[in-house]
Image (cartoon, rainbow, N blue to C red; front, side):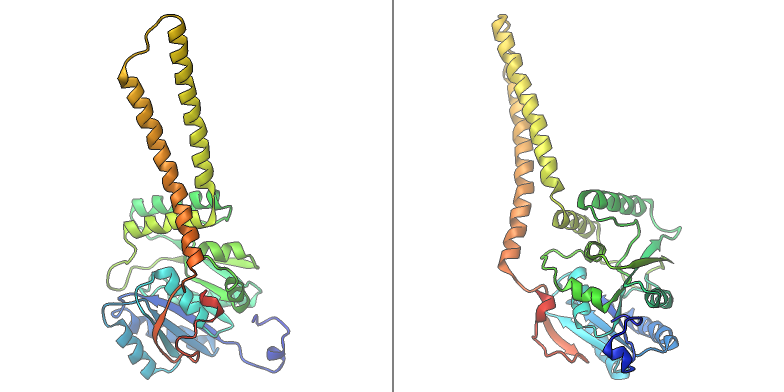
Length: 333
């Protein structure tokens, strides 16, 4: 609920709440510092708040640290997923269990600085139901990561028709109305940056300087980043299929040209060269064919996953959450 809206709750004087949602995978060393910095920032806002920490199947003592923080401060709440479902699903799990009228999502490694949260809240009070952040890379950021990030956002925006600015992160504020809108989207492959942008609503942006990771190693390896990029594009667009159609037309024209060449050579009595050219053309066409079959198979696989209707995540334990354990709710599927 937006603070400027004239709702019965507002008329009754109910205090607006803010939730902080943090997915965590093997982040036991970062959570105490994250909590301390968040508590200082949230206390200064003078708004009732909660922190929802989501353990995405960690193999270290992340869950034990969440339990300790809850014992220290009841406003810290925790979800433990039954296995590692991935960052986007853990983030979505936190969003579905957050109770705040404004929900801020961020990472646990402190690369998303808590001191930016008051700026997000200010934009929310001004009427923005979505407040994006745009990452400003530090000088230490590798050129490969800069170029790869810029390339991804350009390709994604072109292929999906959803404009994403370079540096937009999962560090953002969402109004409760936006989260209700997200609950109506049923995609199996989650790419929340794209979904939040696609869903609309008044929005604004806040720039922030990306900080160094406090401890541990990044969970986004090159392979995971490539997988996320491919999933985000194919879940939002059929452009790959259209590109495949274009390639098929071009290769058909090449093959047709080869046929005309062979027929013309036969008419003038010129013997068509031997098997080398034939094998080359056949190999080229089969290569294109298998690429197209792979792309089609990717989309068929996505249809299969959607038809199965499996839940996006499963919660094995929780602390401080009022919703009954095992209550999947409409938001999870």
